[in-house]
Length: 130
Image 1 (cartoon, rainbow, N blue to C red):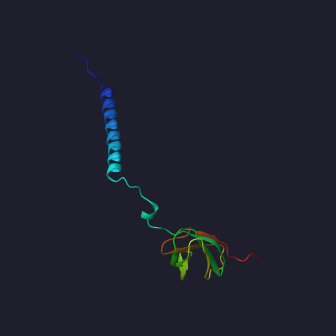
Image 2: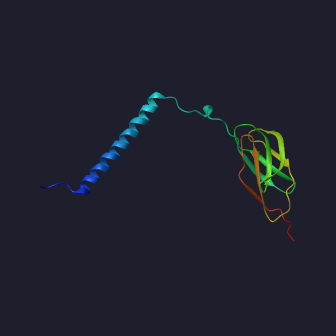
Image 3: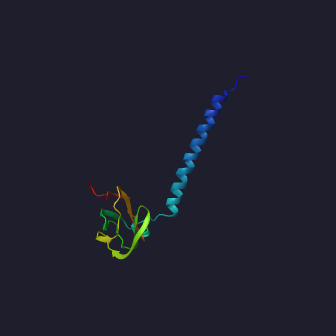
């Protein structure tokens, strides 16, 4: 009796499984789009702030709100230690100078954290050059 080899059976089962999975995926995507036709708009997403450190020295950090929402109530961290808090309201695209004492070291890491935003890590060389 001539039979089908095991390899052919395995390949056929894999093909049927893949085709079934793709069909279910396409069907489910279309069904969800029909049930929930409205698109997610920008107004339905919570606004996020964006802080960018423009400059930092031993006495102050200059920060810009590069987001689309107001940023307020935050703190400045130097080497991951909170150095100062601020209550300033920073409107979108505004630049503010936050006074802070940064030690003179070879290099320090500065991060500004607020209620709706966090700045990227900013590395500052504050050591005096001879």
